[in-house]
View 1 (tube, helix red, strand yellow):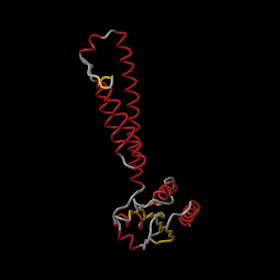
View 2 (cartoon, helix red, strand yellow; view 1 turned 180 degrees about the horizontal axis):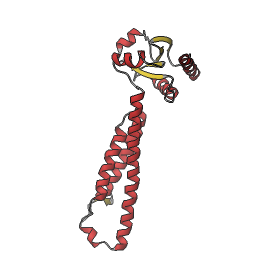
View 3 (cartoon, helix red, strand yellow; view 1 turned 90 degrees about the vertical axis):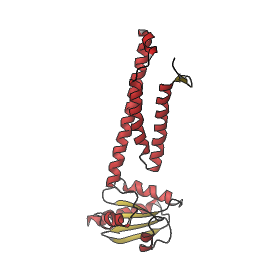
View 4 (cartoon, one colour; view 1 turned 60 degrees about the vertical axis):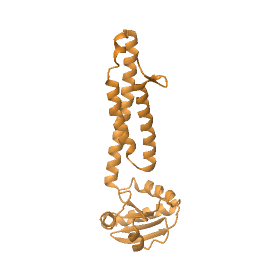
Length: 212
């Protein structure tokens, strides 16, 4: 006898539960920049495929051909939809990993700052950020939007709580703070929440300085 959960088979319930959890975690990942959503999607896809391939047990032997056909179509539809969602999750994970390799999001150590900012071949906008700072959560997405599609200017995000030495070195008295660095030297500095026009002007100046 088939065990039912909320009126459906336990296997179907597990499939839908995993799918819904994957969607929720992917949404959370897009907001928090973590990879848990895509990773769970891939894991769920593997589990779901295994569940779909498992035999239904003794009930299958008593099904007529007319009853088997809708069941086959149902399984194929589930397999196709969930397979595509798994591939999307895997693709998102690969792309996200490649972006993380090419563009540092959050620097945590002074040695990393030296390598990826001071020794950078292109100008870098350094964003001093704090999780408790509300204006930081407004400024940081704007900076990411401006620099994500640029190969001429990079972005480094510094957590002030984890990098007090860098805060002291660059005399950051308040957050958010922006420092523009070119060839290891500070060429511009802003304190506080600045508007989009100033950010675009900074980007233009840094791009122009690279081409000279």
